[in-house]
Amino acid sequence: MARIVVMGGGVSGHTSATFLKKWLGSSHEVIVVTPNSLWNWIPSNIWVGVGQMTKKDVTFALADVYKKAGIDYRQAKAISIHPEGDKELDKNFITIEYTGQGKEGSTEKVEYDYLINATGPKLNFAATEGFGDANGIGKHTVSVCTADHAEHAAAELKKVFEKAKTKKQKILVGTGHGMCTCQGAAFEYIFNIEHEAKRVGVRDNVDIKWISNESFLGDFGMGGMHLNVGGYTASSKIFAESLYSERKLDWIVGAHVNKIEKGKAHYELLDGTTGVEEFDFAMLIPPFAGVGLKAFDKKGEDITAKIFAPNGFMKVDANYNAGAYENWSASDWPRKLQNPDYGNMFAVGIAFAPPHTISKPMSSPNGTSITPTPPRTGMPSAMMGKAVAQSIVDMINGASEPTHTACMSEMGAACVASAGKGLFTGTAAAMTVYPVVPDFEKYPGTGRDINGTTGEIGLAGHWIKYLLHVGFLWKAKLRPGWTLIPE
Picture 1 (cartoon, rainbow, N blue to C red):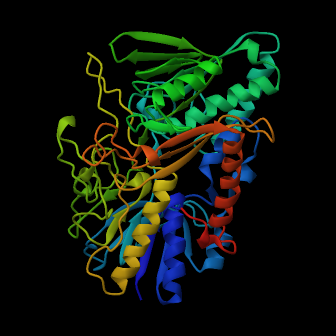
Picture 2 (cartoon, rainbow, N blue to C red):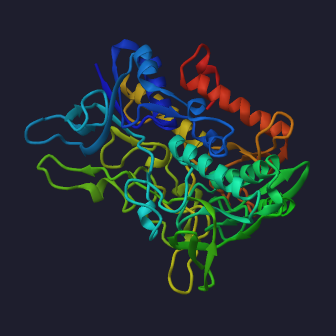
Picture 3 (cartoon, rainbow, N blue to C red):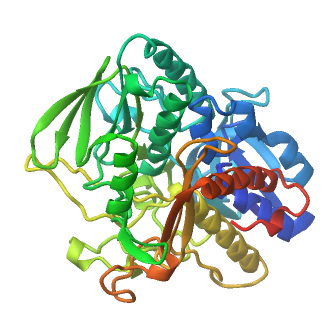
């Protein structure tokens, strides 16, 4: 009997674990280690953040779902990886520390035959002065990165809207550091705020501004796109600028927020100049980092730097020596998501270390890096989780190496970005991109297949977004027919 341990129960980890158990049945053991008791459909957190949904609408308890599936669930956080075992245990294992199930604070060694790192990110609020603490709690701003954060954001936004009935209010939304990712969540949130301000009748008394580390609107951490819009080709820059302009939203781009005080965000721009943006309410996405896992060899020597990149994400079969931007290639990106030193370890979703950014790296004259880091969430994360699960099943059944791939320079992705929720008033931008990482050798000029990279906005997009919310919660709960819903 083989034992597969999945560290993390988010989109990628949950996908891996549930498919592994379905395909392997009771003949093999699947263990999920995650510090969370709830599964969160993160794309809908933006609706929680404006009060259009509640935490209960976007989460469910993992314990019952895993019990029904026959998956061993440990509510704990992974602390360290021992891929060679140690002096006491001649078997590879991880150490965990319980955060629930009545075992809080206790530690345990969990052996594995195959290990999937799907831990996701640490919300690195501490990277920006005054942003928040090491526990991921914002001081002067709010967040929509978790359901709890989003509920807090909704409560604070409600207060601002109430004040706006009699006094002008300033709202700031975007990224809180020069190396942030996940511009998409902030992109959706700013439009939902604008939509809600109109709905409650305070839009004329609210100034809403965007601030981002993107060098231009519509970069999205993917170097921008050329979209097929209604049969015409338009750049994502023009597409995004049109959306912001139509809704009277100002923007600051190429910005590294380096300090946050109460009501003030200090920033440096790509040209080296600095500024301060005042706010009454701010939702700024923090930068992501690895969760801080350590690794040790059989002798107890620290091999963390061997297994993980400096940012804390796990190394996989990527080209980490591509060098200058001019040398970058689509082939730099990992395909098997397998650790090069230990073939029974994999990393999926945000947990794997990308070889480099997708957007062109930029820095200010002061040497400050201001470049979006690659998005690895949502659809790509789920596709990686399923592919690695398929490879492990085949390896258990005799394959000598991974049999399935999920490379971001070979896969497409769909994104439906909400611009406001409402039965008849909601809108969303429905976008597809192929491939996620541009391949300029295969698609000269644009780097992507223009027929597979599209964008449309309207009420239909909103309903697609809502149906995805319903469908993916159904899938994650392993309801009847869940395997028929694509990643």
